[in-house]
Image (cartoon, rainbow, N blue to C red; front, side):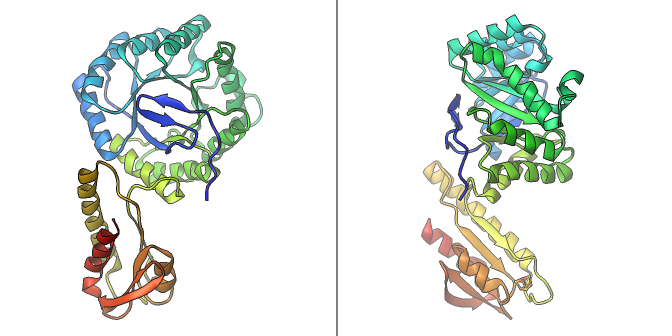
Length: 360
Ligand code: SF4
């Protein structure tokens, strides 16, 4: 059982971050924020995929003002991503952003940061303070290991917020190197009780980025570190959402419905296990969708094991909520540790789906 790190709670619109609240899934729109129609459409797609908080790039006052119109079209909280110019943060607050993301490392105007703090305090908005390895100054980079340099920079960034007693803060420390990212969050976890937005940055295309993110985010989640996550991928942001949900589900910190595990198969397997597993997943997804429509929420997640033979099959199937271990033409169906019947291989999926429905 993972013991989550204790943090304070930060509220981003309707989503609570930290203190044992579910680890939320974030992404970022890749459209030009000024293009209200395209940005709202992409956010709605992200939302439909399961994104719970979305960030948009705010490069100009016009982009900040667009937040007001985008918000009318979406229902998840929106975060304004600000670099260089604190005035853009104030514009975004006025436009109705639910959170501000600042990189104080690239802001020269300390007075401007104080104004952002005052504006966010007035509206009860949190601020995410992020240090990215790519934006550390040469001076900051020189201090010890890259992870320590990021943490030292971040602690410096937080000082004005501490001086103003502004505690509605979320921290992020992202590097493109997985070990640096993990080390930085681990060090910072000993220094504060702010919730963490966890992710590895600049990971590349999905085939590379999902692996790096799974290792980095996964290692931290297993340590109990991480209150909201983003899988940063090059390409369509929609791909980030199922990847993030799978990481959370594999780490055992959240359930998004039923989870199917299956053996890799070998020469002992006498059924098309890949086809059977894909068929079962599809059936379960459709049950889950109708259940969500009926109840307005996800259904209880069951663990279902699909195993190719009698070697490891019975063991895995027994320790899952339910499962099947195939033999020649037949499958032994398990429920909560016991064989309850044997069916023809072709009927195994139907039988498992029936059992799942009866447990929902
Ligand atoms: S459960 Fe059986 S079929 Fe599957 S990998 Fe193990 S030995 Fe092979």
